[in-house]
Image (tube, rainbow, N blue to C red; front, side):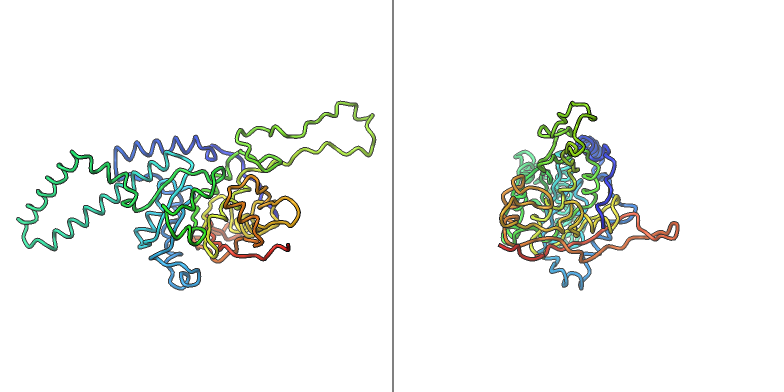
Length: 380
């Protein structure tokens, strides 16, 4: 499939938009703790469908995942809802949600603390009901607990719990996937298995690629980030000021660097985060299944898809999905410069409610599951 057409840039592709959104949602949550923010793709029941997809016993065996140990990394986590849904469904492994919006991370952490405290209270209530045989003894126990809580609040115990990494059930951190280093996410403090296995078991994306696709930010002709959304300083100027009629007929036209949108490098950034045989589960409302395949599992798409693999040409500069390895983090460079060629292959899809229009059947959103595989070896 040819490279999908670019989407028109939108405010949803800016950090300012998401900072403002989550600032509002933090205020709403402070006023009403039951308000946990926007549930993206809720009209398609996306979270439940994704959890159901991962829960299938045959699929778990085929994909090498299990509810007891599988680790999850959620890119563009927002309010952390997808990770919380997985935790509620019984997935017990390490979980990390990252977002480039600090307000998003603060919001998700607030919800995580509220969930953890609520769960502790429910456990204490259950233990009390089992141990006490009468209503009178239950009331006495509640009074004792209240006194203990009052005493601990005077010592700052609650604040200590908030800062105790061991007590955190789901971790959240500020990270920019397109500008940050993968090293920060392959850290033993989030999960020792991530270091041992060389990546996360499952990397999630629910709408993040959609938002990135709406960014006007570009890569310059050296594939470096052009953060100011302005032409790169090393763009080739048009210095031909002579009368065109006086130029030789064979003179070639001035060549300007090709400007690529920053989201075209997304696949190359995601791939090093996934362990060999691990999964990348992406959900989108802006791209069809065929377009997602093109971006992440097919090589001839102009450099955006991870399906081109990560490889090391024997005698010239290394390129990863069109991005020079000099612009990558050390783990990404190490993988890029190995003899192995890595990529994604499609191993599953999530089915949603479909509709028909003009004789064509489709879905309002698409979810594809990719697996990281060796595509071959580079000749040395």
